Image (cartoon, protein in one colour):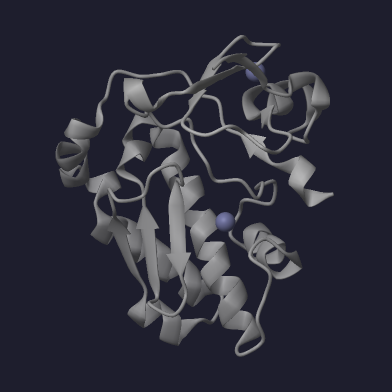
Length: 194
Ligand SMILES: [Zn+2]
Ligand SMILES: [Zn+2]
């Protein structure tokens, strides 16, 4: 059942804060134009020339817990500025969202499932064959909003949440370290505080 395969990213919390976001966007590797050019180059490599001309990439602070979003009709990839706290995930998130665009581009008018076979194929083509469907990150939420705290029974990392987690969610760091990145119920997050 795909719902049971949802994975949760676990990261070390680093010093950078969202207020550093604007400074980060000035750095070459993180600038939207740079990411946009990278995305366009990947699209051209797969013959999606028209999409490559029109695709835009933006940082959008309205994204809350999603790391990124792909809007095929608007030809727009939005990335969450909180990714600055997880710089190694920026490229992967860009490719994840780009895979949504590429999969729908290839399917033309036929609708494809968001994380279905076409998307997985696109992920392989874009160099992230092991990508999982979940693109939530343990983004900081304001202290008052953190109503639920979950914990990984293996690495003991905390996962503060605004809402109760209704699905089986496991710690991705531990799934990667001990189970090849596949969902493993041993690392399922446990509710420790309401
Ligand atoms: Zn996705
Ligand atoms: Zn863990």
